[in-house]
Amino acid sequence: MQAPDNFNPTPGKAVELQPGLRRILAPNPSPMTYRGTNTYLLGERDLAVIDPGPLLDDHLSAILSAVQPGQRISHIIVTHSHLDHSPLAAPLSKQTGAPVLAFGGPIAGRSAVMTTLAQRGLAGGGEGIDTAFRPDIEVADGEMIPGDDWQLEVIHTPGHLGNHIALAWDDTCFTADHVMGWASSLVSPPDGDLTDFMNACHRLRARGWSVFHAGHGAPITDPAGRLDWLINHRLTREAQILAALSEKPGTARTLAERIYTDTPSALLPAAERNVFAHLVDLTGKSQVGCDRELSVNAQFFRLS
Image (cartoon, rainbow, N blue to C red; front, side, top):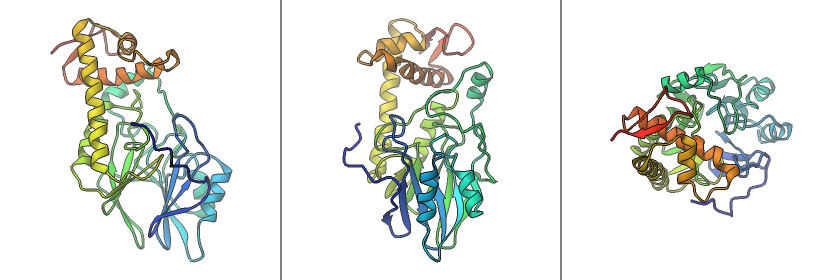
């Protein structure tokens, strides 16, 4: 599913999305961030800043300039600690005195299997981890974060990153990088866990939503449809991997080369990561096995 070409807001400009909610686009466009990171300002008096974004002085100034007379920033909420979402939290907190809330530090919420892979030396890939990030206040799944004229429910949505959360505001959900309209979410071990990702997708799908506001890209006005697409997209890739393994065993790399036949060679490492994420998930479901301890270089074969 391709991104719509008409999403091109002006970086640094606060845009009202609905009463009590504004969005400011950070000036950090890239192949991983699309037009840039979306920072959200929620509230009429006491403001929650959701995902302050990358460490850019211009974006810090834009957020502070969006605070109107009679308003103050009372909460800074970070959905996850990737470098395009969390680094500006500390400077913004220093300027405003508002505490930083998040699920935890960079490896909080990491699954047991991903912890083991990291201990064996598997390094992450993708947007990059804000290794210095530490929230002032840790929030838990199901916790309510109250403001003076708003309330957010914390939904732990690991998968893209172990400490990733979504935030429910009535029937609106801030989904950060778990559900986006312009691209599917990156799931790259050991930072990302596909089993967790799929479970979180099904958990979100069980609820009724009117709109998703993502970490990048335009509002998603058909949340159920987008979740169905994401789930089916992953199930289709899983079927391709199982079909390839039915023909003969392979490593994550050789399977990626067999499946991603139209992918430029420069993008094959990312494809390999994606295949490995599926292989870890399938190993956990006892549908595939491997010839050594679980690793990206193991030879995988189909069990069922």
